[in-house]
Each structure stands twice: as C-alpha cells, then as structure tokens.
Amino acid sequence: MGVNMAEMKFEIAQHMCVLSERKNGWKKELNKVSWNDADPKWDIREWDEEHRKMSKGITFTEKEIKNLSQFLNSVFC
Image (tube, rainbow, N blue to C red; front, top):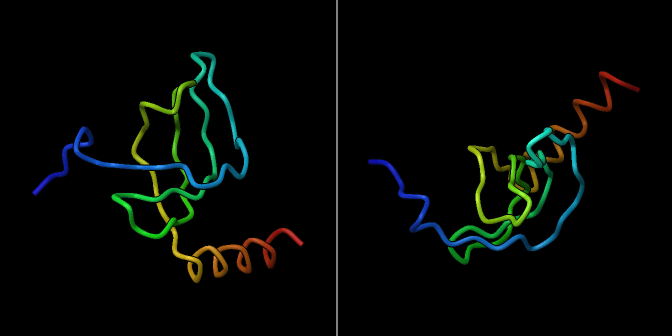
C-alpha cells in the first residue's frame, strides 16, 4: 500500500549540508528530518527552494549513518 506524500507530515529538524544543486534550484541535501512526529532521522533527498516539495530519498538511523561513515572513512582515508 502506497503512502500519499500529501498526508506525510515532516519537519526539517536540522539542516546539515547541501550535497549538490541543479539548475532548476532543487538541492540534494543531508538533513535530520522528523517524519510524522517521529524522532528525526538522517535523510538524503532533493528539495525545492522552499522545502515544500521533495524527491524520493533515503533515511538512516543513527547506527546506520555511523556504519556508513565508518565505511566511507575506510574507503577514502
């Protein structure tokens, strides 16, 4: 069963960084986002300039983002 994005409640609890920006103004960002009043999770997705529209994205728990960070450090350091 799909989820209607219009019914999704979200709040960007903390903006972390912009990863890239497209010519149309949409930005791929890393943020901590609370979905439907849940605890904020790490989130990567594209947002319009007003943060009203978004692309599909991926969320990470604290443990998942730490595991990803450790992996990236082992590859690039």
